[in-house]
Length: 331
Image 1 (cartoon, rainbow, N blue to C red):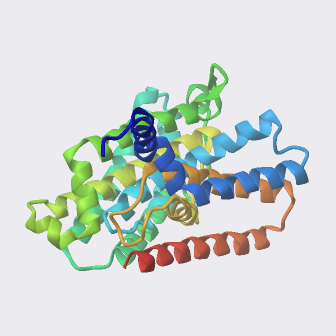
Image 2 (cartoon, one colour):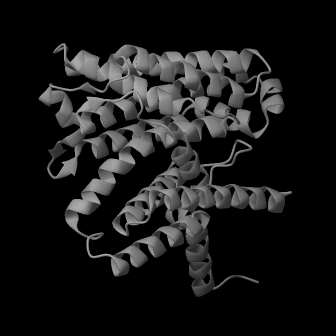
């Protein structure tokens, strides 16, 4: 039977909706979107300052640091790995950046050298993990301790104050009303999006995380993929450290403790699986916003910091459980 014009049009519209990237993204991340919306509504009702412009800008600046780290963690999780060293890299990179800035070196070098340091730590992690059977948890826990020690050695245990206003502006300044760190996040997101979804390496990354053995037999150099993702994670953690140091006007050797928890939570809330091969950067952005709004909201509501640990722990546990249910459902 020949389809009439009305039926053909209806089928075309339905097909278009089914393949619409935005609609598919909303469906895939509906839970996170609803969670974020509920948080915003609750905080708008229960506080007088949440929707104030200055507070919203403050939230944006705060989530930038977690964004960089979470982007790196997402890449590592996609490859089936784990990186616990990022918090320590944040501290060490911030310290290095401030010390360089105080020597009045060009801002480019104040960013580039700490980023190279982060990439080097990532290279160590990636090399050991890819060349041995040691668990990523143990390897990155070890480098976490080592790098934390490096930051204390560099400063003698004392915060390094930044006297370079140009450097400080990289964390506190704005361009046309948009905080500079937010512009950095947008730029990093675009670059990583291209790498993950428009390059051969991106396809190899998802293949490695999905099934490393199958990827290896398909000609994918899985060891090189793992080395690169850990280098990416280290570099992004270092960028987070530099931006944070600029925002705080100082490099602090004790900063960054527990940052890996928020980053992992943001990645998993955004749909990235611990088993590897499943996840997207756009989902991680949602996860980062949820964690950032949650932190800000608990501070505005003056919730005791001890209870904040409990809430965050529950959020992470809930995220892991949701990931478990997704995997169980797909089997």
